Length: 243
Image (cartoon, rainbow, N blue to C red; front, top):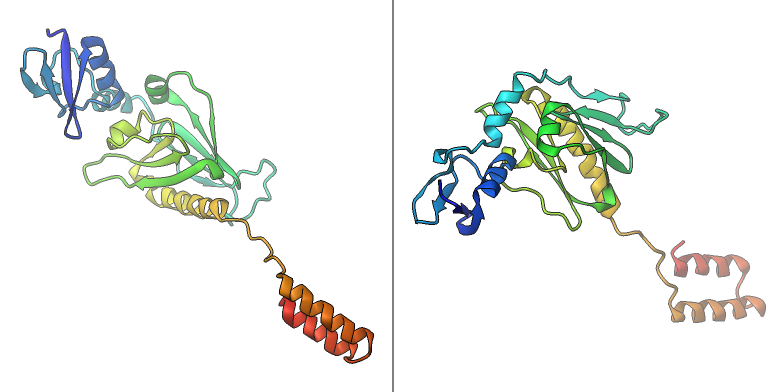
């Protein structure tokens, strides 16, 4: 077996990397079975032809049989805008190997099961506040049976762009089954609205122009000498201040 390898990534030749790193990248989904790999001697071929590599797709297929189907999403309230429940959770989405708790101001991703331990290791719950989230992508399951996923983009972060298998290793992604399409879309729509609200600039009162102050001062002087009635003064004040 070769000691050093290069591999193609979106048209770029990356490397050299050793055999151990090659295996790690395949296990994480960075290198896929169809990725072109080149040895130090110039021999090129698909990564699936390299002995000793185990890919994310293969690992997931092995694990899927041992992991039961996840239950559908549970809406804590019939009205997703109602926050009457004591813990503040709006809805709970039980994805494949991860649970997404949706709150009015944040989401919490909690990993669980064999898949999570294999891909993410021992990691606790991760909290993402809406004002730190820069985007939310939803990828629906395809006709070939691949699962869908919800992927969060955060400030200073770099989300995976390699499809489902790369998304499986992304700690900001929640994978879901085909029968959860409708529920996933509801979660996506709700969070999208919250993201728009959280990134909307705060409205501030328009500053009172100097000319406006001068006109009010002159009108007050006319009121003081009896040139205008109080009704006329307050009507003018409301008009010029837009109240």
